[in-house]
Image (cartoon, rainbow, N blue to C red; front, side, top):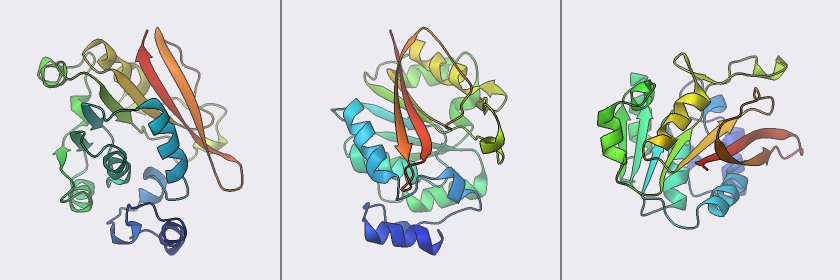
Length: 210
């Protein structure tokens, strides 16, 4: 379970995600959306997506808190949730049970560059497909001058944006405050999520083809 302060925060300002019922893993306090950030994240995502996407792919689902938030925001969107670790995937499956979410115990769309044809075929005919990615930042990210984002050896930005040429219309990526500079031939919208103290918690970037 989440620590009591997380559960209490959800009681104080209910998110509808029922944090007190969710199964967790040791890394969940660092890898999952927290209730203190949910209202800001929802405001950002609603400003970017006025209609329910035709498909949401949570490529780094962990135990499914972000996945459940996407479902809360976009009740009619098909959602695929990917998780590589077997025990974490079991927690994910339990947490999203009954929410019409397709859980896939797999390596984030196979993590290939460029995307494999079988993956491309499954998404190419779906307009308004959103790929959500929350790459690991590392335990000491806050002490670094800048943090490169990697997924299984790939540059996370290069991997995620490779899908923009293959049918995905939007990439949403969660980044630390000190993310390493990145540029590409894309349109990038940036938003900031804050701690209750006013300190920056992290950023959300929306990346689209020009």
